[in-house]
Length: 558
Ligand code: 4AD
Image (cartoon, rainbow, N blue to C red; front, side, top):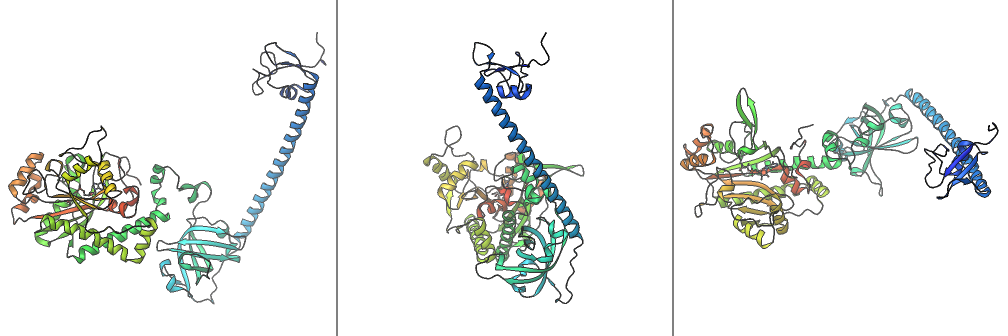
């Protein structure tokens, strides 16, 4: 019988053993002698297996080495533990000190110095003209930099601009100052001073704060704005958080540019004598084919969200003359592309008593005049340069190219379908080849004279070739089609025939057909996708970035 003082036997298999799962038994050996000593005590009898020969007594030298290593390991572990405990103690003390400081900070209350002149409420854009006066500005903390205990820099944002605010001394000691977070709303009082040479801040000035308070605190920690919205986040997550993303400098610049672009379009139409109208979004007719209609139940009747206001614009010509509208159009586009939305801002115009060539001239005039207006405005030009550095106004005249020549161009330039064959006359030129061609030509193109089969039912046919229509797409490098337009059939019989061919019941279109009954005239117009125009102008990868809250397949939130 073995005595109780006899050392335990520890089995070590350097090949098949495991220090993690081993027990030191013959069946479950350790991998190292060190582990064996650690687990079964330094007096353990170690049997070691290094090869196929089986377990043997460990050599004296190997045992000595293992014991030394174990002692060293244990010493290091102890030291680490001590360090950890010390750190924890320090952290605890720091947290306690901070909590105490925060508690103490709660008793620091700022009061406005009543001997100072009353602060005048301004928007940040009024900063330059308000320098030297005491002002009051409210906004969101866009950026925050704390410099020691007695100085804080806040870049304040109010949508009209950015303003550096500097807080010193007691202003930085309050509970709100210590816990201030980005995106909190605050009101600051003080004087805006020009910055000396060499220092930079928005508008080259800063507001020296003498009094301030928090309006609404934004969360810190995991919920903090900067942890929620990061540039490298998943696009779908960013779309879910579009309401927050819009606060970012780039998105805000796009939305500002969008507002200015819309203003320029309106100014253009105003200067050319067009009247703006506001057609309905709920309709009972289609314009651009049944496959992209959004249908809904309208008090028990079938109705749709409008695909285009064109038909309504046509009805305005006899009373208002040339008209335009900016309305939302809706397309149930199943394809996920970078230029398709389910809801988009559609700028449409309609003109009476014109020829096709006059319409093309008008389109070129629209594009160029609007770009001139945008670039002549210093503020807007700055936005364009910020978003699309090196933007050049397109040269006039735009290239005019017939559809048939585009088909030839694709062949000449080896631009093929996915199956390796060429596009043939009569086929629609889809997005990819269209963009490949436009990018290669690298200037705006008025692509005209599409075959009737691939265009909408209402398009006027060419006098000299009845297979073709008086139709146009404006193509821009980087985006492709941004405008679609045409002359309209103005002969009543021809239109009735066109309904039939398209399988459209003419009954709901009675009001549209009547245009051809009560004083018809050659007329035409076009629709411009505002988001596509912006994607081109601002060099955005997708139209989604140019829409406030983009809607596309699978997204109707927020
Ligand atoms: O070429 P489209 O379908 O033409 C019409 O709707 C005409 N009824 C317009 C008219 O003559 N009054 O659309 C016109 C433009 C396109 O060139 C494109 O810029 C934009 O509208 N568009 C879209 N933009 C974003 N997403 C979509 N799903 C779009 N579909 C068309």
